[in-house]
Image 1: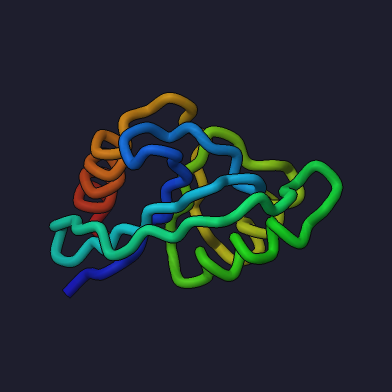
Image 2: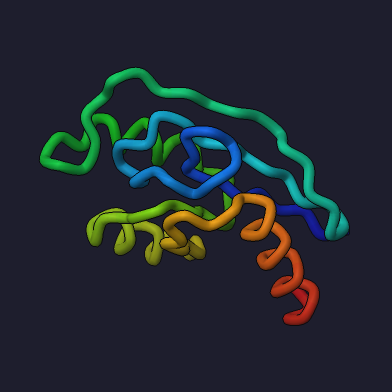
Length: 114
């Protein structure tokens, strides 16, 4: 049984429209046997993000700790390097429809046999 999680930075739950480090909201999806379901939505207050103050980014990193994929409109280079050390896949997909993004990741995993 294949199971993994995807974190999406989204203000409205429909579009990828948030920078990772300053995202006000993440939707977490659990994919099990190629079927996706939204597991939870986590909202953040007015925390500062990647523009110098990494306390906000740290809370977001904790949130996505058990996610294998992270999707955001933008992801700063320091966070990208961290994800690479953690073997997380990350994608910058500004303006993309969240359902489309989830569907494409599921298709990719099916094709690659993961």
